[in-house]
Length: 282
Ligand SMILES: NC(=O)c1ccc[n+]([C@@H]2O[C@H](COP(=O)([O-])OP(=O)(O)OC[C@H]3O[C@@H](n4cnc5c(N)ncnc54)[C@H](O)[C@@H]3O)[C@@H](O)[C@H]2O)c1
Image 1 (cartoon, rainbow, N blue to C red):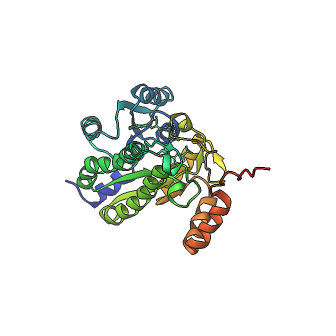
Image 2: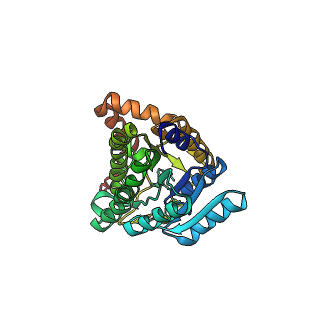
Image 3: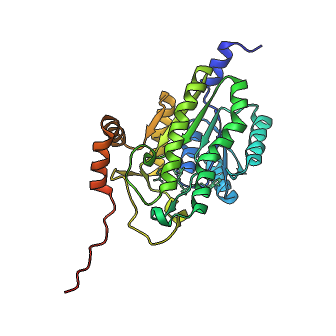
């Protein structure tokens, strides 16, 4: 028989069955390792199946429990396979970390629709598919935690060279907040993680379109994935909704909220496009 105390016991356990997308590299891999160190049973998934296996091996070599499966976040059936594997193997899914993300760089008029479609498909609809597959399971269990990896670029403006990326990350922030309205009253936690700069291999995977600019950056300290992952796991345990990589990001959010027009003017002065100097014939 299941009762409220059973539910609390489930929610407070350390051996959280944790599915992570994009866990083969960077932040996803670091989160997989950090969560495993706190006792999680990790299912590392990635589009790159070999990379997911390497993450699994790193965890098992350090004494943790992990499995690896290929998962392309643009394919609902991959999510279904992963969910069914968790339920067959561990009997539950406690935490879903929607981490996979891509960046397409290019000036606004050079960013092709194909890059927009791919970015939306991975960064935003990837999480919509995750919700469709995992939320019924979490709701039936009455416990769980959805962790969406967005970006500070979805919180305040500092780059004009990746419009599709910032649009999807702002959407992930808004979607996560609205999801919390629905899930938290039902015992399911929701967190939104907004890294600023984390030193990963993401830059190698960026697609580039048209003439390139120096890349826009938030002018905030860059952190290492391992340190960031430890911070995220601490803040998840503390029950935070918004988790940023550095405290300065919260200050930037407050400045934007206090006066969006003034903040935009300051952002243009700091991060705005600099038209090439006119050449004047002698
Ligand atoms: N690194 C940063 O500074 C930074 C800043 C802000 C936000 N983020 C976000 O953090 C998340 C992780 O970024 P990262 O820096 O670790 O990137 P990364 O490129 O190092 O790793 C991303 C992983 O996602 C996988 N992936 C790509 N497309 C996929 C798909 N369709 N299905 C499944 N997996 C796929 C890749 O194979 C890779 O293993 C992303 O959502 C990114 O937008 C990163």
